[in-house]
Image (cartoon, rainbow, N blue to C red; front, top):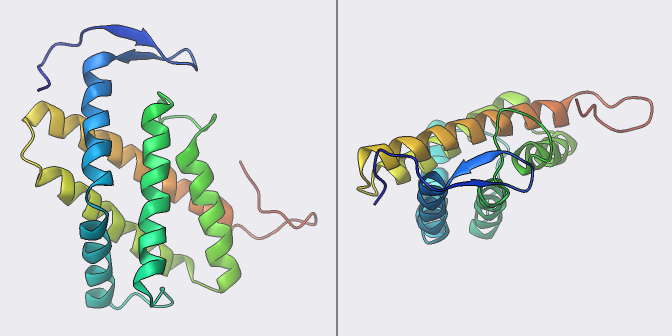
Length: 172
């Protein structure tokens, strides 16, 4: 399990310093998320139904694809050694932009998508909290996921911006 010391520094492909204990913690988080797809799908769909979010998918398979897409963006962020405080090569921001464009094209209101993101955030954070990890590990994962969801919201907002003359939403 993760201790309080940061050991084994390595440099990610983008030049950012990564501590091996933190990386191991985030890799375990990815394993947990990957093995909890059905739980995440159920948690999100229950919350959406309970809170009456409109214009959302009706099929379980569509929800599963949505959870998979978000989970894949999280995995890419972990394995790319990204510091999610900046936009360069950020798979989460890119995913948010794409999803924003898709939802905008479907006529989904930004406030409905924002409500859905809040439900996803809660589902992923609750999953981490329920895993029974040591406090340091749980905190590191929670902080990482909070940054992920902040980037997702930013990407979605960019993807929902009105299209320019060239027909593309502004990207930053």
